[in-house]
Amino acid sequence: MFDLNAYRTQRRTEIEKALNRLLPAADTEPAVLHEAMRYAVFTGGKRLRPILSMAAAEACGAPAEDGLLPGCAVEILHTYTLVHDDLPCMDDDDERRGKPTVHVAYGETNAVLAGDALQALAFELVGRTPPTERWNAADTVRELAVAAGSQGVVGGQVADLGLSGRVPLAEEIAFIHEHKTADLFRAALRLGGMAANGAPERVEALGHYALNLGLAFQITDDLLDAPETGTRPDEASCLSVVDQDTARARAQQLVSDAIDALSVCDEVCTQPLVAIARYVPGRTH
Figure 1 (cartoon, rainbow, N blue to C red):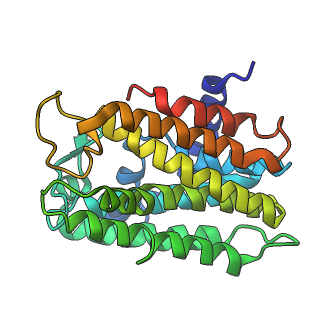
Figure 2 (cartoon, rainbow, N blue to C red):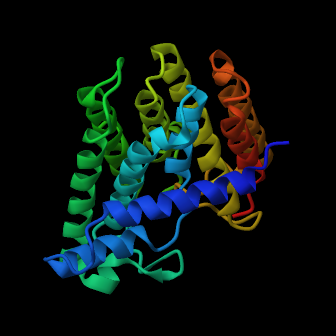
């Protein structure tokens, strides 16, 4: 039986080492900027996106290591989005993962600039992904740019901020979940497939898997964050708490759809992705 916990532990160890190597040293000038960047990246996190990228490489018949560099690029870009989301002009959060947010620890100006620098580094890294017979740097950079831009995570953040504390409509929630969560999952998986020289139909299948997984992941997050029964949800993060059974059923269906999307890949090679998908609806944190 496939051991997901052992797989995640091994991959996280590899990812942490790679991120430490890829980020500028804390004492590199300007030191305060590089300290802030490292602080943002190393305040915890499941490293799910680079794990998915490495698993995508395996699904295309290549070593997991082929997906490590683009996966780290997506993780660094994801971190930039968190740094900016936490700013006083956006979500105005003082704490993330039990630690002061970057703007609290280093000041608002340094937090903005650290986020900017992380975004630039993400594109540098994805551009350094070795080209293959089917995919080159233009393909990988375009993939990350689309996920990061106005029709990706930035667009999702604008939609989220536009809710202004009111109860969101179902279609608004779907838009936010796709663009704030699923788009970066899709980039991680497609980039892992590209780095492994995956055939276009496999890369496309990985994208379908990612979309369904990302939506299921966010629904599960919202259920975990839901207020007690009978209270009124007042944030976009409280998706469908008025009917939690429906939301759970929707997450389960999305997981099934994600797994079905992998049918074009070899079954043995997709074991990690299947196990991750099945884990999502049962998450407790």
